[in-house]
Length: 359
Ligand SMILES: [Zn+2]
Image (cartoon, rainbow, N blue to C red; front, side, top):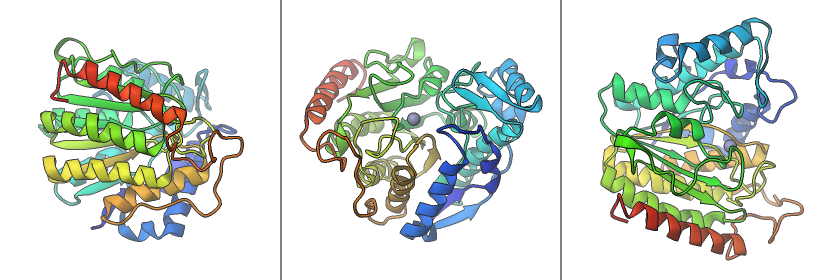
């Protein structure tokens, strides 16, 4: 099965300078897709830019204007950790547009699965603010578009970026139409995503946070997907699955210590695609978020997409090792203290979520 991939060289033009989130990340993705052969499993398409009206489904006009102003004024700091370059406003609209292009193709039946290889990333951006390298919340706009314009009633967002998707959570915190599930490292940036944060009002029970400790690794992640994510997804019955696909939980990543391998990422993709096949005709759209080691990012994404295309997970190139890591430096977190502590987190999440779901 071929997977639709939406991307464009224009995404390199959001150029924050000497910064962890830069154009080199997308180049690393394209390189890995070529070297692993996974690129041959993809059908490429260019993005249509989003309009201000599209972005306005989620963001305040004040925030949209401010991003535009800073970019048009030659660029600079939007917040302490988020930089805008002269073309960033247009490219951020193109990033949202790339995700909408992918979602519309999947909802229209042109593709079963799709990936939006876009930047800047989005999941930290709230309705009124950019932060954490994110300007507009690509995945949140896509979910709002699917619900408000395409008539969907239930969208599942799985966020497996290393960092908590605080922006996406905030946008849908009081909604029962979006089930937001996040696995993230804790403690880590941005410091949100506690187990007991489960939504509010009508949305109570529709936020699921799984904050994992350093060293958690593949097997404990898989356990969380089997024992928490799968039964809740089955009870929710999504009509579309969006994945905030950050690859910074890979063991080589300089920003985190969750110790996933690229094979592990591929196996997570298998669980999500399997659930989508069972629940919503296979409709999954992966949306690129973080990932800051060229190999960890590129090979993990290749592994995710290989499995989405019906093939096997992809291992990192031979000899990859993180210097100074606990354990063997090769990821996986096998039976270490992090994996055991991660297991305790899962028990605690289950205890909290039993108030809402058959887990
Ligand atoms: Zn991240």
